[in-house]
Length: 226
Image (tube, rainbow, N blue to C red):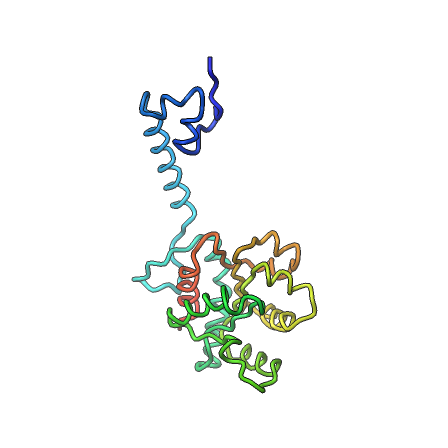
């Protein structure tokens, strides 16, 4: 008798079932394998989605369609408090300072910047705010001091940059001094970040494995809106 090649949890697709010597006929409609697997898959997806998403945070507007996980709400709540405290003292400052690796300035960092701006977030971004002839460190100090929150775009390029003596050290030190830091992990993982910077990895934030860049921009827009 032919044995199923995935006896415990079944096959991950109809194509996989069709290639199994025991289930190939079921996958073609005999015995209803495909329909039963599809129902299981849909139910599992719904269960994962409903359990991973939580109620809206206190700063989210009643008509907002943005959804958050419970861990996102937990990590962003102290940042929101810092945003409110900062805005109370400096009401006319920018919303966010975007810290990124130089190699990302024309791709992922530019994409995030544009999405944030489209969502109504006023962003300090070196590509537009660091003018010719302006001392870099002075401009960065001013940008940090006049922003509600700092965003760190964590990419493979940033992971390469962090261990070296660079501008990022000063930026991150200032942001880590208070609850004004939101790491945004893109094309890498928190585990990889932890291997390079345990301190930065201790601050959980947002991840493009969970949300698209556009969804992250919407969450930041809600986070900094006063």
